[in-house]
Length: 392
Image 1 (cartoon, rainbow, N blue to C red):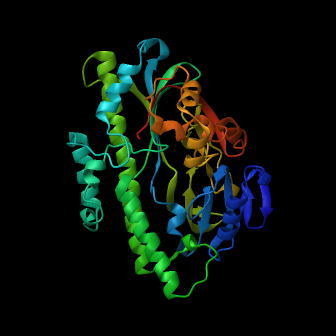
Image 2: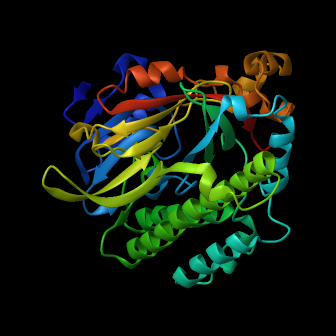
């Protein structure tokens, strides 16, 4: 742990933080409603609104752009009963089967909803306080879809060769549109109130105002959408595993041994240092004592199943992954399809040029991130990928 000043604490050497991200951290730490300090995770890098890998505790206000536009983005992991010896020699058919069940890519939707997706959509509809069709008419068909970019589905093996399914996704188009709407509302309020900000994305909503309440209602709903979206996709992966190993549906309960689910772009009320505060985690996971979490590396590298150490100076948090080293544009300029294939080795993945910007070399070293996380988490399992699925 490093104390940069009385407003910033980092869990990586401060000199390793890129200058633009450091400026971003300084700007947000100066906001008058920030409680105590900003906690900076080992995977931090420049982000929109706030540094990715930052934990921001606030009293009386929230910055919508600090939560980000992929509201509720996070992870789910399932430990299965199977081991490496149980897997088929050729994993491509398993990968193809999962890809048939789950729509991939930006804007992808279901042609029809499964029964379980219908139930989840009904749950979200019952919880809705407004007509979300007016925000995104396709939100129902998006439930159970992966998206693109760094979202993924992976079949992994742990140190005992036990099979895990790991999945990363968020609130899809509806979450993005809701977040964008409230970011604009906050910016408009700043203009009306003549609030001078160093960065327009620091626009905030003040607690106990109609705008704050409207944002929190949509935020919590979108976080639920993200969680249910992951659960629906995991159900479909387990169904494919049932067919792969048993030749029929229905064996999912005996396949699954343990399930872990965690958001890493979200905000909620918590108690810290004797105060009730809003904690915004942008690219960070909550890690209370012995709380289970998932910290993934990039495609082709290791991922980690962890337990929390409840570090108070991190507001009981930990990093959410490797964090980008190069922008998508820079990665596409630097690397080729041959580089990606070499990096992926024997892992079954979709050979597409659209995935070059997800090459492992475009991300920080996950092992270095975990080394800097020793005060935040205990490592329970180290996972290596055998199947990787991403959308364009």
